[in-house]
Length: 178
Image 1 (cartoon, helix red, strand yellow):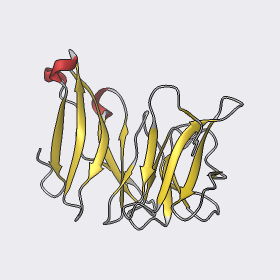
Image 2 (cartoon, one colour):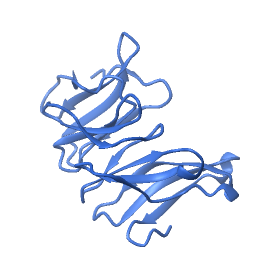
Image 3 (cartoon, one colour):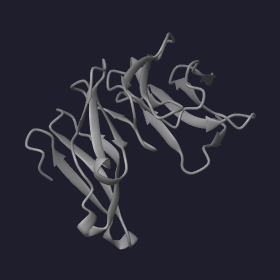
Image 4 (cartoon, helix red, strand yellow):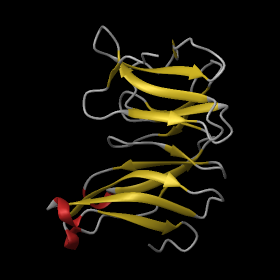
């Protein structure tokens, strides 16, 4: 099936843990990003209302809701079956959101001292910074969080210049050690 044209810089998609639901961020015919959704039992691909202008998308582990970066950089969530979105976190930075099975939404945020990996509860209520870029290593971002089952460890990309210094790191969210 045709999902449409991938977003400008890189494809962004979410697949539910059971593999039954796929959400993909595409650019529509007007040049605006939108999330499309398809379930395994259907050949229909439908835009998700409320995701217009989104920058990234993830599906919760239970497959019941989407998390996405909205225009302006806020992280929002909405039910897969439709409905209003709710605020998870105020600000992100070109984030690739991810959702853990223990109720956290992970994302990248900030520049300078605020640059790093952050998380907020799926219901909202404040965010916490988990990592800070290491400027001595010439890092400039921590992106692409991938929480592992159980919620204790999050993998993420540590981007640096030159590109050969980039690495994949594992963060223990309890001890905050990589």
